[in-house]
Image 1 (cartoon, rainbow, N blue to C red):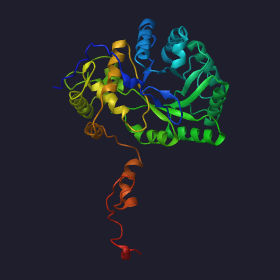
Image 2 (image 1 turned 45 degrees about the vertical axis):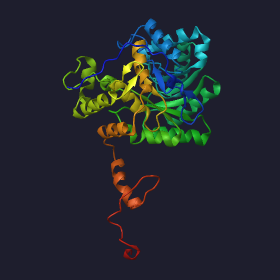
Image 3 (image 1 turned 60 degrees about the vertical axis):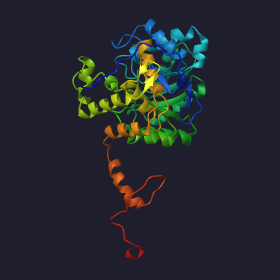
Image 4 (image 1 turned 135 degrees about the vertical axis):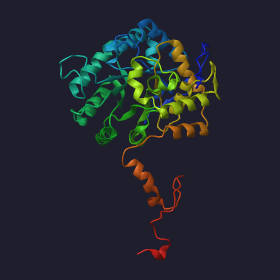
Length: 379
């Protein structure tokens, strides 16, 4: 039976790694390696916490050196933004020192076709509403929450550029959008000299690696820093799920399709690796290792973590103290290797036909068996 490490109650004294800032994408914007996600600020969705607890989480994150907070207009019917606005406005230095990100796209007005979407009216109205809730004059990073297929991407990008030029928005990014749409938007912005996308927010974890097919590679090539959400796959990778003990409840019903032998083998390996690492709080946990794995992935800039309590926040932040070895990474990579869509698997086989035994940029190849044995054997 897999033994799951429990989190000690020892509070973090300091976490210098949280202040090892990274620039986000092809920009000079400095952000913390772990971003505080604010989806649980507010109780309207039934999964969050009240304002007093949310404020404690915010202050603890800032106290330990974090500077990047992510919310959305739709989180808890707008209450998440309102909590942040009420708290941060009271102390201007807090607002000035953080990178405050929010998203537009969710329609908060029933039966209003223009209440959400990627068109000019929805974007401008939503930004103005977010600014009122956040009680600020500007948004540091504005995300398109998800793709609106009914709006031409040119209209979206022109409107976003107008918002940047107006000073209401400082930087822009896309979330949960197909790679081809992101690439189209970035190329249009480059051609028109409009504000570029600097970041891409996508689901990414040991149990969600299909983004490596196109989204991650696209982001790296086109200058977008990746900010993964759900790096613990809704709690599955925390270690609370085992072959012999699976919690009941709504989350179990939603995640049951992921509770298979591959998942349990990954959890077993996370537990084994955690046993070889420690943090200020004591023994490392599977969650620490899962977060450390995501941070090490190519293209990742800042990983979004959620927390309902200061203790849960500290437990997640302690993952910054876990440094995985090449062997640790390799074992987790192998166990979680995804099946990628065409043509990615095919291109893996095609490498031998391209390189024919040569090593290029550190990537070796086998001799292509269908090639001529020597120069004289060619037509």
